Image (cartoon, rainbow, N blue to C red):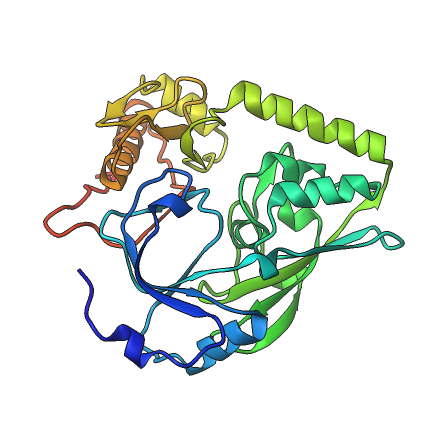
Length: 314
């Protein structure tokens, strides 16, 4: 499946390398093949040294808690970085109403930590599944707010292995997009909140969580929102109008609760889920002339002898 000998070519690190590690249990869909090499760095400096000294031809991927991610059945070649708990620390500056969080911190923990400190304007993070690293990369948002609205600055590791502080405007955030190079790794971010009270923010979070549980398949194996909202449209309405609510490919299904979510009902493969997604894109375009763009990140390679037909309008 993978070329042999990669581990011997990698630089010495203080963290841990492991070969041929299954990634399925690290994703919300619970599907996908292995990592050729999985690397858990000790700290930011260890990660930066790895980037600085790794062979130029070795590809690098990074995964958080595996939401909004579909790993293909053939796995991911090269090195997959999985950040450890040390990258999930959160600190609060109550006087400045700011929260600083590591890239592996859960978005929901940002909301909760801010609420407990009486800091407002960050409760929307309670509605975003994933980590701060993912929120920075895709300008994650919910309930009318986006990451860019509250971001002050972030720390990144560039492709040369340098740790840099980047101010918010340089991220170039737009709808589910970031201008920073795709091979830059996010390690920390600072967010600006507003003065509030614990009671007000706790109530806001409770409302967001209740709404999410009522409208989304939160208790299933899902990857979150499958497609971005096209300009002037809601993705779920387009999917529903195309008659795709409840549609299935193998054990992959369009959720009947919220049809911009795909779910793994039992033993779906990544191939099943990606095929279902491309089928949705085809049907929506054929029925409404609207082209859906994936929000879920699809990574890795297909199993030998398999492929997915990617829909392209003629």
